[in-house]
Length: 312
Length: 312
Image (cartoon, rainbow over all chains, first blue to last red; front, side, top):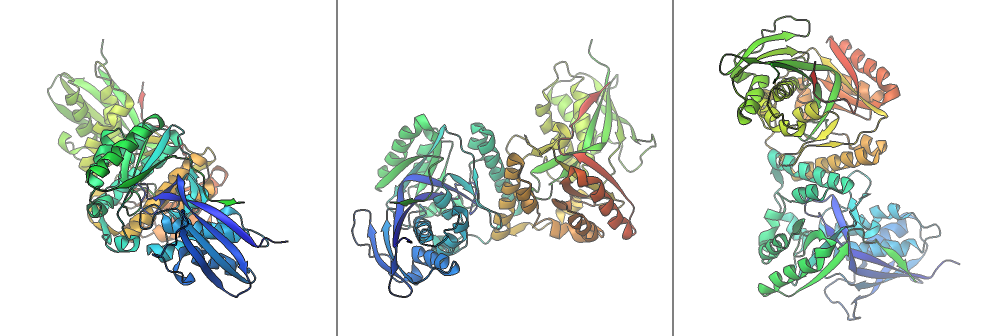
């Protein structure tokens, strides 16, 4: 007998990881979205509820199944794989909205993972990525996998357009710290404001940094990681819209961060750091944020944090 | 007693390796420049001779020590390290001029390696890179290490601006094929003709390909190498000035090349291929070139070809 209902959890994630705009992403631990997909007697796909982790109704997001990343992604998979009958979808948002923590991606990924379990022949995890991207594209204004890929696969993921997403090795000795200031940035709007061109010099320098960072993940060379984890192109364009960025990033670097930049389009800010210094770094970043009069939350995660998973 | 004279050989190289404009280079085997540096009773640095490998006088290059990459690089090292007295320099050009095979870089590297041996306390090889770049910058119109780094260090080298050059791992099963059509391209002029900007989309796609290629070198994933070894930005701008490029590259891909692009600014064309198919690939590329009425030479090299070395 096939299941009537399935629930999946998908973690938040750090898009771009500073150095790899649109092509690099990192899963985090401790925050994520939970989506339950159930067979329905009605045709089509409908959203039944959208709530916070505390069970409160969330009114910021549309219940229209054509306008929600979880249902768009679920529908894309269900229809492509010939799922029979309708579905209802219940969404529990653990990732703050417009936080730069991959909120829309987490919903899309949880949606496809839960839907996949209802198929007669579920697809392998990697094959779900394209469907999750379908959902993500609606929210973010572009087809890029830097949030959905780590949310689905876990860890640090390289996901260039046109190539398969691949998990990069990550040093066990390094953690991520993610700080979410209580501000909102609309990803699609933020993206629309980016310069449409870069100079040849910027391109060469940035791709050199990315290649150096990828090399550092394989060789475990933290010195190279420190020198390469930089965003010369996007961060300068987006940072001015996050009022606390300068203070928080300065605090992070002073506290010894390997690197620090915006998570996705912000306002969240991430840093990488050796494990034993992660608590201290998180405190320094939180203090710097609060000193600007902005409340914030923080998470510390291993670089190899798990991707999405079904729940009982 | 310190040596009175020293000779070094430095190999030709493939700049950019298609996918990594200005930041990736590959040493080749069987072609290179040889530079002999000798102490002199005269002050300053003078070029005594520039000859071909056959011993013929080469009249295309200036004997002015301020206008030759070998002597500029040698002088930069000698002066910075407090070398006493003058030097004379004899250059044997085994790398064709304006070939896209790193001719100016090979001379600069051989010049610094030979000069280094005359210092009271020679520097480690890696420390010679900056001096070689000094020479190369004169010839190429830009400070980039994608020819000098592989010529100095051997193998496949990632050398982004601002980061230390690092040798990437290379699969033993893959060889490079380099074809040099009897045409000339001036690197500095070619560089000046490149577009000063790229679109954000081009930048993202190209840096994704580069990151994928670097990943493939570490993981040994030849399928990923095949999908990532592409130059979307520079090759389309330079290829039209190399009349045989379209035919030769098509022949290479049809013969099963993992990838094929211009070597540096061209006219030379390289391809990567599994070892056992390298001879056949070289023949296909040479045939395609000659069918266009252009003579050519070809070289087959392991990806781990050695860098510069002192000779007895």
